[in-house]
Each structure stands twice: as structure tokens, then as C-alpha cells.
Image (tube, rainbow, N blue to C red; front, side, top):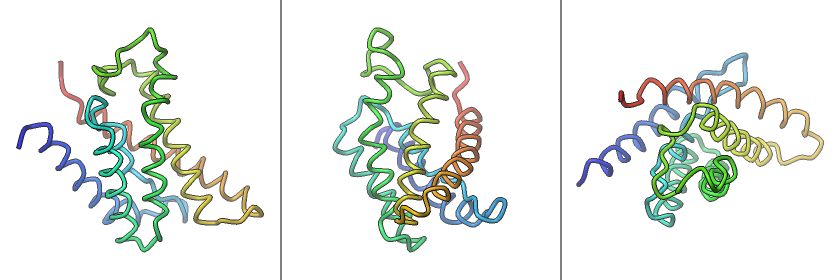
Length: 168
């Protein structure tokens, strides 16, 4: 087992347990639970097999759903943002800025990385809350929960990524 596979395996298991045991029970301001397990999508190497990435993202989401009894909501949402990751990265980086085979979230500029994380987080959270409420009359609740939870998720995710960033 090479070093990259080991790192991704540890990250997968670590994010799963962090989400299930800690972040899903935080209840900031009564109803905000950061969803940091989506960091898996941000940090998985772009140059790896896309089919494997989508399958692993689905497995992470379905594992979260299993432990939190959420009926597949997280599996759908994380698989969806995993599918959209490359097109969003291309749109943010602009075609002339990068060769996506060599891109790494830790090597791009802070502004572009923050925009990338923010975009995927908002999409993910909107899907989660839309499926959770599944009622057009709850659109204001869906939007407010999406925004508030996204703020805390982005804050915790960027701090975590910055803390574990390799020193150059």
C-alpha cells in the first residue's frame, strides 16, 4: 500500500468518525451541525481515477447516512459534489491557469481554494437541506440552514486544511 492510498484511507476513516461522533452532535445555536466530511472531496487527488473517486465518495456518504439514520441524503449530496468537483475547479481556475492533472487544493491560491470550497459546500448543503425538508414551503428554512451551516463548515474545513497543510 503506497503512501497516498494510506493517507486517503486514514482521511476517509478519520472524517467519517469526526462527523459521526463529534460534528453531528454539536448543535451550534440549536440546529447548526457542520458537515466536515465533505473535506474528503476537496482533498482527494484530481489525477486519480474518477470512477473510484465517485464510488468512494458514495461510500463515505452512505456510511454517514447509516450512522445518522438519514436515508441516503448525505450519499446523494456528496456524490453530486464529487461529480461536479472537476467542472467547478476548471471554471474557478480558468483553463489557462492550470493543467488539472497536476492540480492540488493545497497548491492553488488561497482565494481560488476558498471559492472552490465555498461553492461545493453551498451546493452540498443546499441538496442536504432540500432533501431533508422536501417541501417547497420550507424554502426560507432551507436557505437559512444552508447559509448558516455552510459558514461553520467552511470555517472549520479551511482551518483544518490550513493546519494540516504541508510545510514548504
